[in-house]
Length: 520
Image (cartoon, rainbow, N blue to C red; front, side, top):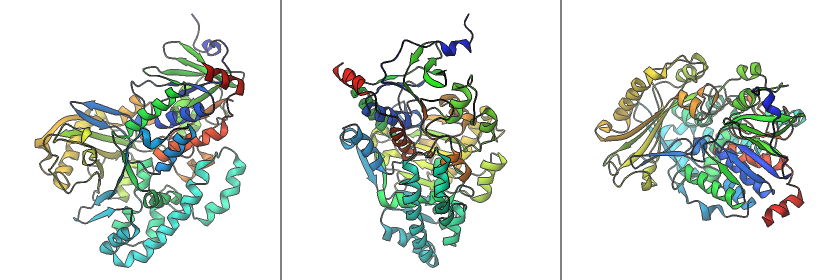
């Protein structure tokens, strides 16, 4: 019987010279496959799930469609540019709707803050809560725009795998006070604690602790104001399906219900993959959209590492876990008329609760919730007259926390329901129908996410840019990484940008092979 180690050299017949494999059909993987297809490669995307999209997929249950992961689309031009690179029109394939308002934040004292695209509307909200902070808010917006141009349009759209690239930008990091945290920067501009929350919570949407993540991430405020917040009809899963359609139109294929067990390396170069059923598929280019931790710890387990050793991976700070309660409600379409598409229900503590999640590993009794009600915009997510919701609570990941989710999931869900009934959705229990719960264990088993983290490696300053796993692997030639765990980071714009960076690193397929493939 062939040993597991020996099988790493058992490769399929030689490739065409233009064959590429993408491991994982998450949004970063699908975007990468589109980019490679546009460069002349014949791409095979392999994913263990039965649908494309990864965290951006959905599950339908009893007529209710639950969008499992990302719900907010910002920077839509990134998607339009991706489609254009493939000779396609994004808006012909996806129905994207601009939202206004974006979301509402509700505090325990009954006060609220409604985020909108209009600068004047936002200034009016600030003035209503804390008139003395208006000047500081204006300064914060300017700060946010400066960080957007540097952090997103510059660093976020190019590879940061060379140390020299990092050294060149260090003076700009210093000038922009990247050493400050997002919360620290907000606190230096406004005094009202509610406004400090409103201007600093955004890193939680990409897995970061607002009290420790670099202030570069205040760029999100400019993103929202400049480009808006959008929703794709059919959910983000509709974007994933449209991506799969583009890939197939390019001559690529998706292998679903198939799992990669190992990336095969020959003489220091990635030459293909072996699936868990033993099948070997060869390729000239291998791109991993699997979590960077899983890629290096599992998929390259037989290869010596120069940088991403098991010890190095274990020393990283990983993003928090997520507890997500998906539920449908019967006959509620006209109920709760003040509850919009996106709502953030803030708990009694901010800083100490964040410490519980990221530092202490403690599952606290209190919580803050992000509540998604897509049926406000997209009635197709539920049967007529009904609603679909999900409520998300940040919790410790499995590496720092000791929570036994097998026994704690239902009590925690009940606490969540009680909070929603008291603060947002009175009478909720009488209308509940279909339900589904994801815990950090679900993220670990469904997405192979290390420690059940929701967003891979946390984006602290020494875990960003050059310090993050690179898009071009230093462990094997011909191997590239995309997605939340690599540069530029998590979130829909981030993973789509990682595919854009990939496109600058992978050479075009050999011209002769492109012509042959086109003829086929």
